[in-house]
Every structure is written in C-alpha cells, then in structure tokens.
Amino acid sequence: MKSALITGGSRGIGKAVCIKLAQDSDYHILINYNSNKEAAEETLQMVQANGNTGELIQFDVADAVDVKSKLDLWQESNPAGIIEVIVNNAGITKDGLFMWMPKEDWDRVINISLNGFFNVTNHLMQKMLHNRYGRIVNIVSVSGLKGTPGQTNYSAAKGGVIAATKALAQEVAKRKITVNAVAPGFIKSDMTANLDEKDLKKMIPVNRFGEAEEVADLVSFLVSKKSSYITGEVININGGIYS
Image 1 (cartoon, one colour):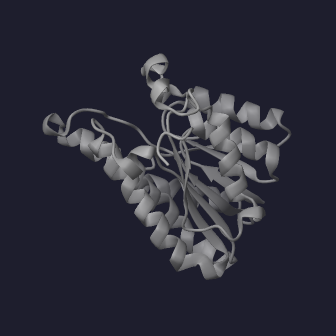
Image 2 (tube, one colour; image 1 turned 180 degrees about the vertical axis):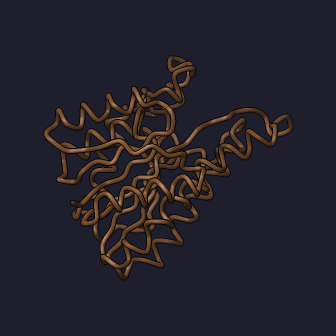
C-alpha cells in the first residue's frame, strides 16, 4: 500500500492537497492532524467521496517522540505499507513585531514549521532511501523568501525550510527522491481569514487572493512521476506579488 502523508491535512491548503491527491493519484491518503479531529474526519470523507482510501493519523509535528511513536505504530499495523510521499504542510502564525515578541511565540512557530519538517521527514527518510523512490513537498511561504514585517518568526521558520529543501534535495537525488518547496502568497484559508482582502488584493498583480485548490494542483504535479527532473526548487504561487 503506497501512501501519501500530508501534515496539517485537516483544513486549508492541507485539506485541499488531500482531496487533490485522492483525485489525481492511487495513493492511500494519510491525513495528519493535531487537535481538530472533526475537520480531519470531514477531509477523510471528501477523500473517500473522490473514490480513494485514506485514514487519520494524529500527532503534533513539533513533538519528535509523538511523531516517531505514531508513525511506528502505523508501520506495525501496515507492515507492507510504504510512505512514498510527504507533504510537510503543518504550520502556524503568531504574528507580532519582533521587539515585543514573546519567546513562546518564536519557539512555537519554529517548532511546528521547521522542527516539524525535521521530525517527520527525518524519521521516514531511511525507508524512502531504501525504497529508492520518494516525493517530498514542503509548503513554505512568500514570507520565507522576501520576509514579511510582523512575521519575523514565520519568515525565519519558512526560510529555514527553504534552505533545508535545497540541501536535502542534493543529498537524496541519486535515489530518485525529489525535494521541492511550494511558496504560496495570499491564499484564502483560515490563516488569512482576518486579512482585508479588498485592500490587499491591490498589491497583487492578478488582483485576487489564490485558492487552496490552486496550490493543491501544483503539489499534485510535484508528487507525480511527471516532475522527476525537478528537485531543490522553490516554486512561487502568488499571483505575481513577488517574482
């Protein structure tokens, strides 16, 4: 059973990726969530409605022990199972000016985005190398490329994942494992729900926020066999706001 693991798969871009991969691939969809089980179950229903199989897998990506124990438990229950695709999507924002930023806001954002990437990918990497095939897609942000004021923590976390993407891609390319990053701009989701779209869209050349499904289309291509000569790349999907 070849599987695709999507962290933070219960809502937003993660949910859209789960549904898109259910439509476009034969992968068994592993929907990771931390606390919102109801939303994760709704995602699972939509995966199944698209004619694919899936299951929920609960862990906090920031907790290395939790990640290891839940993934090991899944492997024990599915001895023939192979996680061939990892979409590192889990992330949070705790915005605020750096001079007033509490350490816990810095730590939590870094722990989920950057350490979460390490905890999940590092644990699964050995098996991926052994199988000589894999697709890793890291969801980053325009903030990690250009920096966004009020998001020093988020920019640092995503910038770290971008650099890690480029380095890891070179380490594992010979084993037919690709590692890429997708950097969305303003996308309609829970994370951007409090932003003034009417005002902000004036900054965006295409004059609108993006849809989570548009990001999912790009991720779907990157996890497919069609993308085998693309690795170590950061692909912007931002309506021209930073290119």
